[in-house]
Length: 306
Image 1 (spheres, rainbow, N blue to C red):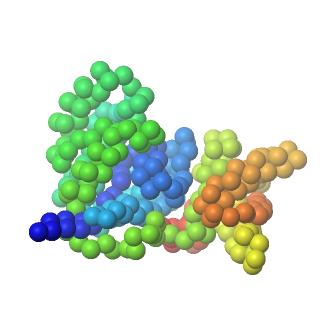
Image 2 (spheres, rainbow, N blue to C red):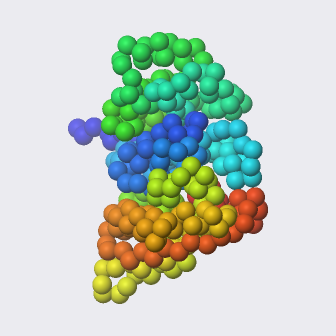
Image 3 (cartoon, rainbow, N blue to C red):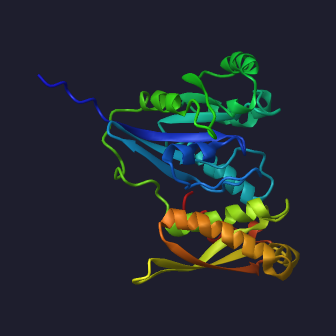
């Protein structure tokens, strides 16, 4: 007699937490493909992005969200709204905390904790970056956090090294409802390649420019063309900033900074598309675009992935 096949499980899982705790690193590691950009600067992720983890018995629809933080500008409010909206449409929440620094306490995460307490959702607490602290320091944190909320379970992980991520996936899949998959099993995300390309360029601006530049930056794809018969994609992208002084810094002396951004972005885009890429970058100025609702919709990419 053959054993009955296990029921397929599928559901939505939001990944939430403060900025820069490793949400996008976790998602990219699970998928084995960069679809959500990362940098050491906080508030890198602006949009809500779906990442699809599929296997024979399950599909987990991860919702990567911007970090929950005090929002004082229109663009920051849009980012926090995207994170909060995600909590209204999921089956399960992964609440991620960075245990490597001084913000690992429940008190430092009060804003995000309050948001979770206003929802009646099951929450899996993930203590991330355990590779950066001695193991004896983890036990007091586990004790402290176990009393800070009503968690389904607590899973220590390192999103960077993959330690504990398999345990996390088992915990998540086991808590999802029985359901057929919502998306084709070979699909990785719900956003377009153009969107990911624009995000990869913006990531390089984050990583390679000074502190003030990234937050005033948007990337608009003006041309995306497959060259027939040449295994080549031609991409024209414009980097928008708010002031001419920022434009000069992104371009750099003799165009060196812009060339560095373009070279780094092209390597990632070629890995994404699996072919050669001709990437041309230009830089433009739109004064106070981060304070303009219409420009936020167009240049901030809030229309896609949010």
